[in-house]
Picture 1 (cartoon, helix red, strand yellow):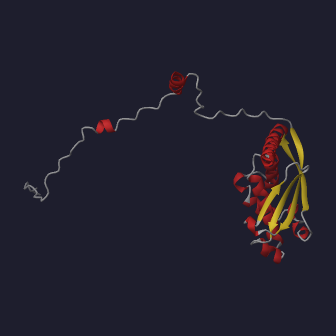
Picture 2 (cartoon, rainbow, N blue to C red; picture 1 turned 90 degrees about the vertical axis):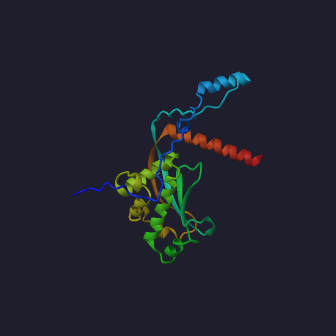
Picture 3 (spheres, rainbow, N blue to C red; picture 1 turned 90 degrees about the horizontal axis):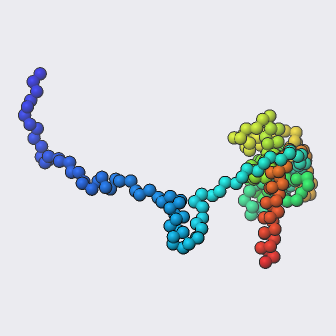
Length: 227
């Protein structure tokens, strides 16, 4: 097979690469930021003993573990009618309660609670109560009591602790647990009603530190309201 040596004709002019002579300068790395010592030295030379804020927050010293203590807990249920809350089922706690009370609130002004109450759907009512209580515990893990309550309920539902099943999965299993069995009958009474009680074990040092922080927060709020 013969190969033709005739040059290929083209209407386009030859392409010649053009190299930017300043490209090396443009791609040079930026000047590295000044070190912490250099910043302090510059500040000291400009305004004497000026103190600059730390470049990174200081880590809090871990709290030493304290002896475990047992804390009594009560679970309560109530029916409210407040569509402005935009939540069909939620739970709340109040400070200073002994034993610690966690109240699940079913909002009959919203779906699906309104329908579950109308047809007396026991499974739905127990399931929404479990969702409300587990959700409150999971969204305040800094509270040692609520963290222990969530673990207690999850282990009661699943037989073990599992992070990714610690709310919805456990709530579905809890609707059939004897712990929540009295809920449908209690909803006909006036006001909140207790449906379960148990003890949880918490670290005494962490509980004392948490209560101290909460007391300072409430005191600040009270002073702001008074002032």
